[in-house]
Image 1 (cartoon, one colour):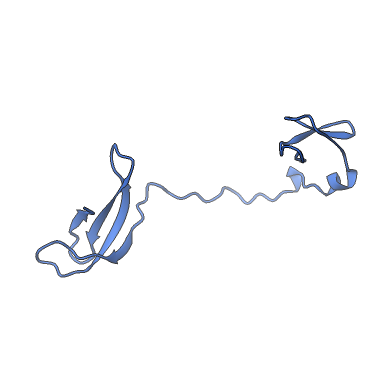
Image 2 (tube, rainbow, N blue to C red; image 1 turned 90 degrees about the vertical axis):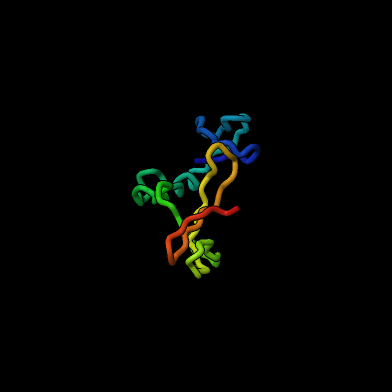
Length: 105
C-alpha cells in the first residue's frame, strides 16, 4: 500500500506508476520497495481484539464519610453513571461497611 506524499490519501497502481485517488499525484513504482511490503497473506492473525464490557460497572474506593447515622466508616466505593436526560455524570457512593448508598451532592 502506498500513500500520497502530497495529500496523504491512499494511492492505486496504474502500470509503472502509483496514482493518488484524491489529487491524482503520480509517483514511479519501486519494485524493491513493493517486494518488501507485507501482504495480507503474510500478516499474523491475532484473533479478535479484547473489548471492554460496558455493561459491567467499574467502581473505585475513596475516602468519603458515610452519612448513615449509625456508621463510622470513612471509605466508600463510587461509580460514575450518566445522568438520565443530562449531559454530565453523577457519582454514586456505596459505603464499604454498611452498604448505605448516596449520590454526590
